[in-house]
Length: 386
Image 1 (cartoon, helix red, strand yellow):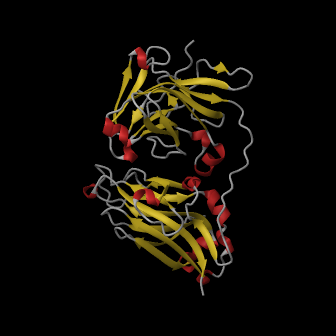
Image 2 (cartoon, helix red, strand yellow):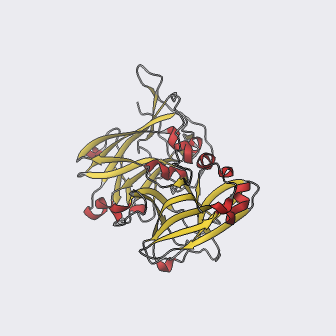
Image 3 (cartoon, helix red, strand yellow):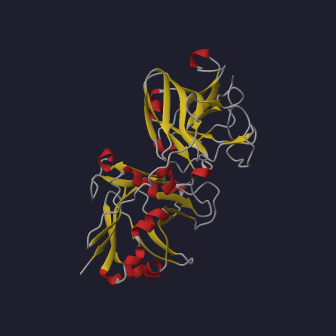
């Protein structure tokens, strides 16, 4: 029996009553629900506008169930654009799986024309700019069964699991270079009672004179950071924790840094003052406990930032109070250099008296400078001086 088909027209976010069938997993209370079988339509599936092509396939060699599957043919050579996304809400097909609090696992059948690398995970924004933790799959030629668990404790650091927009799939750019397609079928979710997880500890190293804010030596720390945009001036920034050596750069501390891919102002935006920001999570701020710093002139905020491309940006530090005020400062980047910032916490007195949110911001830049620009942030810390 065909299980329920789920999908979404990405721009429609109306709640719909879930309908259809589910299969009980033998010996457990888990329920397996088919979210995509591609028997009716391709319309719900979305992709980045530069991704490539998506088509329905009816060649039975590339179908694991039913009569159709989804043919995915990437042609984009920009890694950050090379993704598709499969939403969890559909007014057209009539159900809503956006509350993923009971989702334990995602499974799918994928046929690869030749060996290929993909990444999959959950996303939390309308056009999948906000992505959760990626799961890497090394596909062999032929059929592959892929499956990944939802790590609820990690997701909770950054996003609301009850507002999950769906599943994303990223293709390695080598697939674009080689003209490789893959075929996706029977994408399902496994739902059941979630075992109590120990809350993920956010550990910030500290001594009497040093207090880590973020050194990004742990990959999960990218979950501490969420991108936001003001007035919709530019696409959301993409952030990830990476080994800088993989990009030909030496980190100033450890071997990892936060890689920030920024994008130019969107076509048609005439407002000269739109901003994009990245914010650290509320749980991170609780662990930091800003109110412990009282003699603010004796403590300095320090960090390092690296500009990879020609786009020079003034990165602001925005310290918002819980009552809505803000104090700020900035550092101007230099191409091919780690620029060090150093300033006393007394520049941000209002925040340390009444902490609200902490993040970075930059003025959206013109598309004439390029399709994207990359920066690296590392070793954000507070040090006691003097």
